[in-house]
Image 1: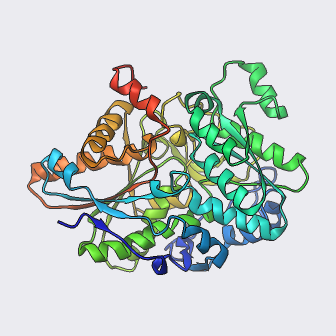
Image 2: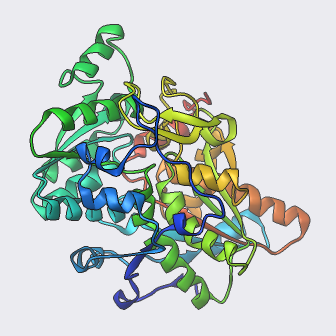
Length: 433
């Protein structure tokens, strides 16, 4: 039985897909934090280069991938699509389970799809230094690698709880030449303010974003780089879904249900948006599901409204599902999913009924991830494992209903630098929050 479906480097997409062009209802615009009026594109150029601002606002369905970016993509793309036949057998399900494996990248996750693109466009625009935040460290490592490839400095504010829990990912950033600070840090006014209020503050992505933006505004030749949430980030990730559609055709099947973990929305968007394009075109009514932690249930328990992307209220206001920008998530092991808000594009897709959301507790996530590792051999990142928990539930539902279903999910990163989280689970110390 064939279990792996590969493409060649000639099949790397030549353009990114922009779902903004196909939404049946326009996406509400970002608002200026002061005036609360739609923000003009030039206002965003204080923190982003003009070429990325143009992508953020672009109405074009296709955005060309520059050759220097495709050349670097070829280091790991196309990534494999695999069928998890041993996982299927363990679950005793008639369902066929496929997964797109983005952990094959040099940095170990899907994040390099946008870090390479952002570093390239910043380099072309004359930027010398990038400032950013990172939760679990996947994004920080990916941007550190991309900055080194394009000769840019990289300054990372890493959420403190992940800085402490995931030292090897921090070391990865150092190896690629980045400077890394635990956030809240003593490097910025806002960081010092948060530390004064709570010296033991575990940090959050909202706080780290505030620090990175303050750094950007105050440091010459510096721009801000974000690993999720915004339109241009989701755009760059669509290479995932475009490749997957080709690979599912090779496999001779089409998914019925599609899953991806959701923190800010980038890996989910990367897989799901090209399938939403097909759904809107009437190709098939796919069931598309974003999966998040119960400890940070943005889509399942948040409100759809305008909110700030950061804690210090410096970002534009975005229309998104949010738990409130002051929300402090518990210190769960899935650091990449500890964000109070959700990508406006993903939020809009939920509002329009193009997708749905589910939430799972830590213990059931690690149970599913461990079974997957024991049957398929790959150890998933804790973030990606949320999708696996939902896949396992769907496969069991198919078994109980006696239905064959074709299930697809994005294994967005490997967990080889998250083994302390698995140790906590395997020794019975992991608790649901």
